Image (cartoon, rainbow, N blue to C red):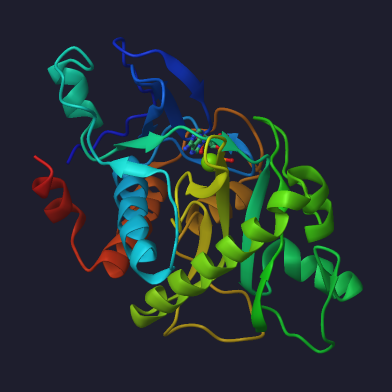
Length: 312
Ligand code: ATP
Ligand code: MG
């Protein structure tokens, strides 16, 4: 496991389809599958930091793969994009060096048409949902009961979508009715039912392992040939979710989360929030890495080293 962060993915043997804040997507020769590669880049407040977090790409990839397996067994009829943790073996597809670089941080996935919303599910009221609730007793425009406290568990999980902004723009919270107008009547309820079922199954699994999933962002795609909806992207990772320690949880106050909290706090206290090209000091990198690793190990019951070794 390298101690250097890999922030740029160079693959000369495959055409790059797109580059997001964290991932690079490459087309595989069959035209129907993609190589989904997760770098160690980290973003906070919608900008990418100059240095990455070593091993973060492994953690996000291997944790998502674990979730696809867990959710498949717990959500009846679930379709998801994950195919394999390794690129196809034909030597012409990637070089041996590229294959080494990709090991543990890449997966092959079914290429789908992505619905242009973020399908957020919330089990607890926190973050932007808490700010909105305090102001108007609503969450994404949905009326809520009076008297909720900060970080309180909702009586049942709710579907609270947002727009999916272009790189550099901010996602905007919307109502389920606005999401329906974006994705169309034909798919709106199917998407909502799918992500609620995935959240419930994931939250129950995580809670058994001492982690509360306060909220999470799913993405969904459509197979236009079969008209089926698929769970895509990364799933229930510390980047896409707020994980809290069950043992430390207390309603009525902010919770320490297993994600970018250390990094966000450092940026805010140094007046660097939203500034481009910030270099993180080694202690912030180390602490952030440790939190990601802890989330991985608690949720999978395996060390990261052990999982990486099993892929060699
Ligand atoms: P952020 O997650 O921070 O908003 P981002 O969404 O810009 O960043 P990444 O997460 O870096 O981007 O890259 C993943 C991209 O791949 C997303 O645009 C996502 O919609 C897309 N994607 C995920 N799964 C599939 C799939 N099966 N087929 C096609 N595109 C996919
Ligand atoms: Mg993303």
